[in-house]
Image 1 (cartoon, rainbow, N blue to C red):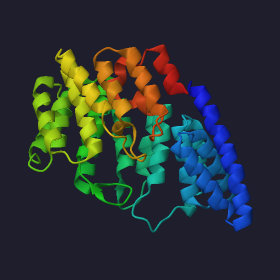
Image 2 (spheres, one colour; image 1 turned 30 degrees about the horizontal axis):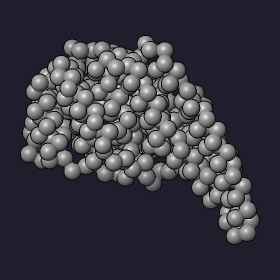
Image 3 (tube, rainbow, N blue to C red; image 1 turned 180 degrees about the vertical axis):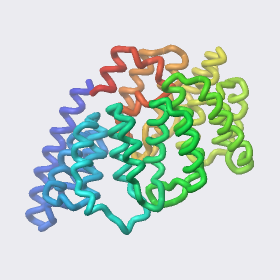
Image 4 (cartoon, helix red, strand yellow; image 1 turned 30 degrees about the vertical axis):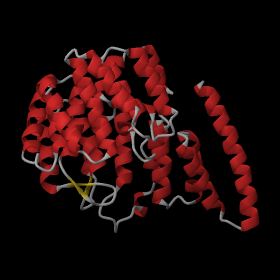
Length: 350
């Protein structure tokens, strides 16, 4: 079924490209603009490889263009080809990097590529050579994840404190609170099965969140969830859902609540949470794997040991036009019970 849909998509994309070329000739629209439009269309349908190839065509013509390098590498990452992404991203001549910027997200993509191929020590080098005044939060996240994978608990503590003190920034240059890194750390510790350290950082996360609970119930609920006190988390998640205004975060919280019901043996309420998630309106395309209903349904189904249903929903996530790429699934600690499943492995390798 997926192959059939992909064939239909590329047939439509070919028609689109031909039509675009005709329009380009008649309207004298620059070819670059047409190619970028085609690449963005490919992204909307999850055709990451096609998007990467289109951006690469432009990048080869403009090797000094850092944004085109970024787009090419990013889409190769989404297409599950970190080696190709790394080749593109590291091929860029650093003398053309934008030095007037306060941060650099392209470098975080290099770290992500190293993470995906398991070259965790290389991420340490990337961070060491990062000389922008603002630390891009995506790079900080990959760094801390790498330190967990390398079992460098002292360095993890040191760098996490540094990032908390100096601040981390999003892709708009806006300072982000520490919840972003706490969630990443707890997920990675869950992923590698380090329960001892997870208890430590989930506790720190809780202490940090409890001071903010008047204005931020979401982080408090997630902190309790990672403490794996699922009975207490049910009440905290319920409180957070009641005041949460973001549909994306509401969906995430409803999904975690479903997991808690599954973990505490309340299968009926867990099933009700799946229905709640199903009834959410689709979120904007820009949201990633932690913000779409098929994904959150799958997380609950994993907790219910409904592996076939979970994998089916992950497949639905990939074809739902949301911004998904399957290698994200194997980076989620809540998916660990699927990792040895052959169908899951085939899903994330394609």
